[in-house]
Length: 117
Image 1: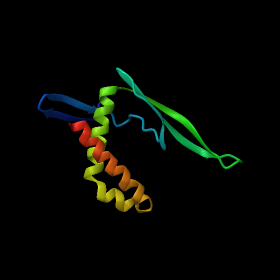
Image 2 (image 1 turned 90 degrees about the horizontal axis):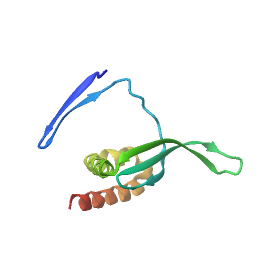
Image 3 (image 1 turned 90 degrees about the vertical axis):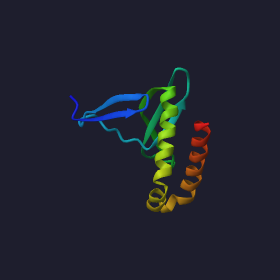
């Protein structure tokens, strides 16, 4: 049963987005693998379980997202827009990684521009 509803009425996009407040949330630390295909793509995520006796980080694939490829392109665009909107806050809170983040945000911006063309 839906607990919240957001009505989307934006040009040709007309739908109601229903939220279930009890939907599961899963923590992931990063992307393990991405497989882009047609019509579907797969994104495999991982979590880190520690370091073995040889000092090698142990990553475990824990979630696989199967998603239409056109939705992946939409997701890239939406994520890039969000990063562009919140870039200052992100860089401020992630000061230790700011140079790497600046580089990645610049690449996201270039990617977003190429998608929009």
